[in-house]
Length: 60
Image (tube, rainbow, N blue to C red; front, side, top):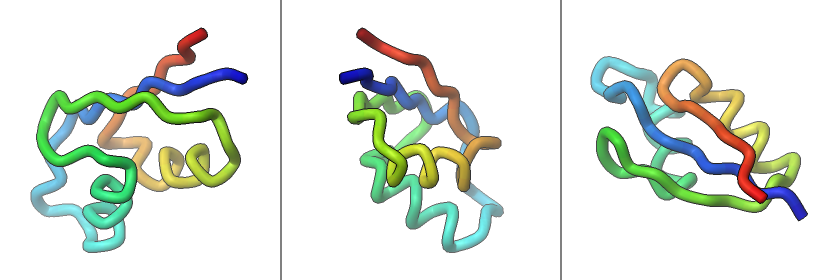
């Protein structure tokens, strides 16, 4: 199964509370944090919500 490498590249300061909560749910706490998650629709939806704050790469 494919995996996604999600990296926070912008600060959440000034963002909506929903975006802050989504970053926390993904496991991202500070700038340049990286997590690897399973490629599932739930994760894709969370990444879509904060797409302006993160970068995403596919990992095998």
